[in-house]
Image 1: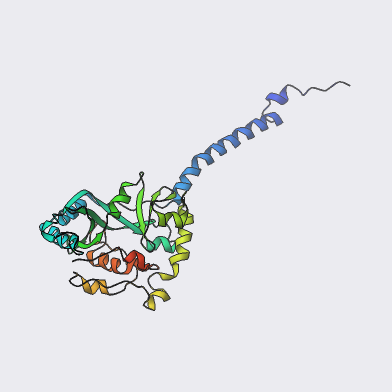
Image 2: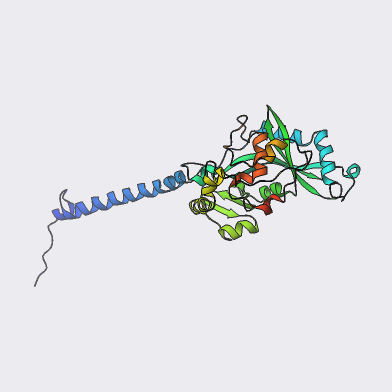
Length: 292
């Protein structure tokens, strides 16, 4: 039996099966290339953009407020509060950078399309006393000027900001957890964060599902909020802005006093008092000590 060979035209003719196969393969390859080119863009579009950074002028003004003579006097009293050092010998100074502090965004918890994972809440400068104590000086814009709205023990804000690897560091204050968002990944920066999302981190989508489950029923306007269960704690005597701090409040809308980003001083103090009211943690509240 002799095999029959296909006519030569079948390999070269415009309407032959071989020709159609070649065209189909080329088209498939082009489509695949197009899809490969579009896939990263689609994934990128699905990842929330990081929150805007504060303006350089805002950081400069915030640092000026943190280093003002009146602030340093207040810091002397703050460092002397437990008798660790005499106020006259505290000699506080501001060291390192003034850093933006981002916190979990209520809109992200709600699942609002395009909402950043976190929002800029205030700026923090690290104060150090003569005996080595450290404190974080929080500043926010109020009535057209940057003012100190809180002083907190420790230097968490600066330490975790320094741990960033090119992403945005933010806090989930309800459990005092610190994370870094870099693209579509959330990386834990402390023990609380590792407990929440695992040592290897998680995706932005998976993190959103977790916080929505944990705090979705505790946002402003929720039954939790209407029952007055937003929590919070009152300031110590002599706290500036006591009326705002003493009232438990739900998560603020994040309205800024200007285009630089941080919330107003009143919102920052209320936010401190209520720990953003997304399922409050009393343990987290213990770290914060008002002194103004």
